[in-house]
Amino acid sequence: MDLVYIIAAFLAGYLALRAKLPPLVGFLLAGFTLNSFGYTSTPVIDTLADLGVTLLLFCIGLKLDVRTLLQKEVWAGATIHNLLTTLIFTLALFGLKQLGLGIFSELELAQLALLGFALSFSSTVFAIKALQEKGELNATYGTIAIGILVMQDIFAVIFLTASTGKLPEITALALFALPLLRPSLFKIMDKAGHGEMLVLYGIFLALVTGAGLFTFVGMKADLGALIMGMMLAAHPKSSELSKSLFNLKELLLVFFFLNIGLAEPATWTGFWLAILLLALLPLKGLLYYLVFHSFHFRVRTSLLGTLTLFNYSEFGLIVAGLAYSLGWLPGDFLVAIAIAVSLSFLLSAPLNSFSHRIYMESTRWLKEFEPDKLNSNDRLIDLGNKQILILGMGRIGTGAYEEMIRRFGPQVVGIENREESVEEHTKEGRHVILGDATDPDFWARVVSRHQTRLILLAMPHSQANTFALEQIRQLGYKGKIAAIARYEDEEAILRELGVDAAFNIYREAGNGFARHVCESVTTDIKSF
Image (tube, rainbow, N blue to C red):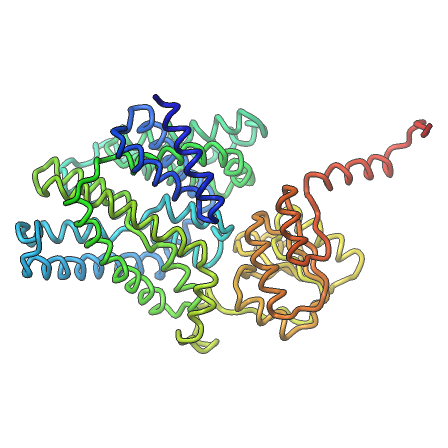
């Protein structure tokens, strides 16, 4: 029977991909379809789904700077939004109660507040997946959104502890000693190599040291995986570990999204309740935008951050399940929230796919702050008179930078969206600026005001390179553009968009290796 789930997930995911939607939309629909035919979740699927979420949060931690959580935009923004959303949702639901609408008329004010609180959260899994698919996990709005989601996870731990009356074990105090283990964890990671032992070490840290240890002391397992990842974020091999776990994590998350549709049998009562809850989602999105805007972020950051968080969270299911088990909510609301969460994913997925186009249209009527009043993390940048621009200063971008400096002198500037990477490059004497290369406003300023003659797109995600290329062409840029690609279909897309040179990094690596050998090694080989 497990084969049926795999076949359904593959077919639905493939059809969604062909329709230019994220595959997760297909996985959700596959779950609902299977449920309608009488299929339910299995212990195996539940376990795989939980493992996927745990690995996802561990990988988030590997890329998360704890300083992000200390920014007022994150901790204050998350707190303000959570309180306002809970209050406004409670008032909206109370209005439905006063109207005598269906099952709402039977609920007490405390129960309505509980529903409002459950619906105030956004999905960490969905948001991270959407950011990864767009290659914007480290963009300004992506970083802020992730920070808010982490704060929401902390709120979740507090709620679960308070509602169950179960306090963490006294041994939980020992968790404060975890930073003392950091040097030892770093040493083991240094000696884990680059193959299967590195992957196994990452799984061990996520599932045993992180999730297992936190569960043992009465804390949330996923929070443990996240914190363990954050402890390793400063290690030079953290990025390599994250990439090594990527495919495994993606595969396991298929079962998470499939499981949402399989969770509860849909009923008409639950469906109509879900529609009513979904009608409140725009209020939640509006509050997100206003919170972002209140911290003087640009329209783009505020809008894209809002769209990323424009959904309900699987945590709502946890709250509803707990409340149902304690007799606080009727069973129909468990079904309603399950459907509402899934429908919010189906609504949010295409919005995120077309988020940049939505932003471009919205600039006609959304007012921007004056440049000197913008948040310091979100100001546009001046590139000076540099003629060569390199987008993405990873290993490939860094190598390209060094070669261009050797050939053309100080006419090169790199753009990187990771602050710690910019600091490292600056220390090594490279001219690298913090910026988001997927930002249309960024391109409008760079291309229209400066004499840039060559742009190298060296970002690791093809979608980011493709979007940047589209923006450049729309702005009438006349210089040369070169871009990297990992696969032949990505290379073909870049050429169709008019790139002057597209380089397949795998094929070029082999060619470069051969050239290096021929130049560096003297042999007696003769051609015949």
